Length: 186
Image 1 (tube, one colour):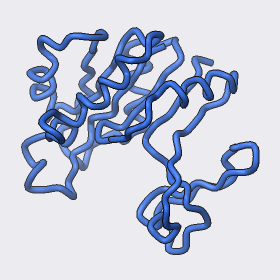
Image 2 (cartoon, rainbow, N blue to C red; image 1 turned 90 degrees about the horizontal axis):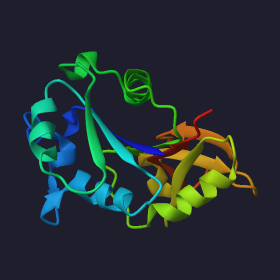
Image 3 (cartoon, helix red, strand yellow; image 1 turned 60 degrees about the vertical axis):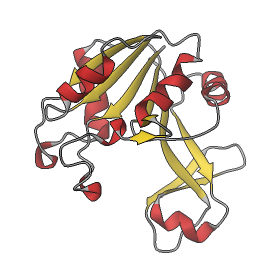
């Protein structure tokens, strides 16, 4: 299995903080956000490589960050975009990495700004049991009204997604999508 960290965004809502520096490299608790993610990935024995897709603007920042890293192999992928106007977006960046690096393994995808405290093992164990299904990590908020700030997910009693709405005014559920995906190789 491979892991892919999406870090090619421009985080324009955080300007000026992220105008010249990528959001995944901002520090939380004295280390970059991406290091918190990598620490979780490093605990999964069957993941053998981590791809980090970034853009041309911040590629050198990630090169500097990745030099001398221990743990699983980290491969940086430059999606060649230079601004928020020509960015590929998450789905196109996933496709770009899969094609460019000829990824044929199962794939764990995580947003480069995604902080969560649960281990990945539970999500991956559940996902691997689903055979050929793509799985999306979700989180249940305490207050359903707060879900209007996120992608809201509706689930049936078998945990199958029956609805997905981005930032609805009236959320139908307290479950929100995390940028956490399991994509089987097929």
